[in-house]
Image 1: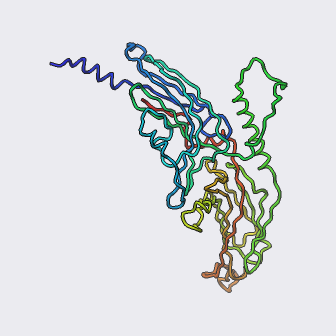
Image 2: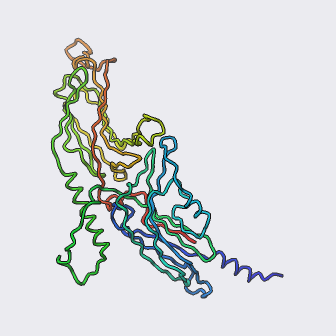
Image 3: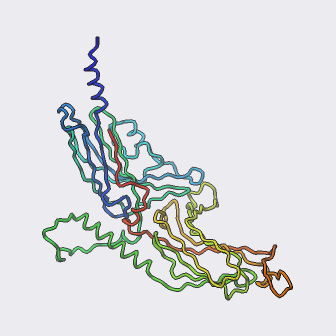
Length: 404
């Protein structure tokens, strides 16, 4: 008769043999290009500390690397063939660390891999933490999920047991790109500046803090300028009214506010709508079909009936989760306000009719009316915001884990 107790111990050992890997982004899942991404990676043997030393776990190595994955719609984008032979050869060998193994699309950007450790032994209940720091490239695209293309950033942590395949833990995060930071040179004579000798601060983190402060200052300067912009609204028959807006440069998270004045118009406006839109266009050399239409996405909309209304206004929020305008060699994203107006084909007085001839006069709307419609587009510029603020609404989690 087989030894049932021994068989159960072996099965329990197989089931319980595991290591928990937890990766935590200290500041949140949103960063500016040029900032330092810091991630603390913890390896834990979850078995009780009272277990025997035979329950210790061994990892051969662990490594981490940041990469940006690009994916394009085959129906809209014609990409040149890429030389993926190197990655194909590596993918066949399960002992080689390939961060984008199994990912869709192309890896268009990656940082050098960094080894976290070699030959790690974890006793029951023991944990070891390692800090991974890397500067995000300033020449990469922003994170973007459009109708034609996608740019996705991930930190991939690869680890391997002895005589076992590699396991990958992917930590997705968001990157915002602010133009102007790339060419900024920090002063070199900071040694003479006042400092606290009792506080130790790494040079990379100090520069990272200065970069965030500089970005905040540049965004404040760019989006705080206000000047009156007046536009006449008219069609082929005459003037409908005027539109007023005080700035055309915004940060994500701000509200776009505008006002209408229909009191000076010759043509009555029955209804108007304003849409906050992004325009995603593929560069001509990468278009699947010549002259193919651009893709529009509506982020906010305001609609109002305004017959006999002298003045009106609207407020459209720019979502913190949206992507600021940008341009790469493949795609361009622009923001705009799209206006649609419905005007009467008759004078304002004919929009009402007298209901009776008695002393008590009742005015009612006409049953049928000739109308004209026309549209107008006003380009605006949308910039990034403080990445900490954008982290509050991010779909990504600051903590990711895997069990191997």
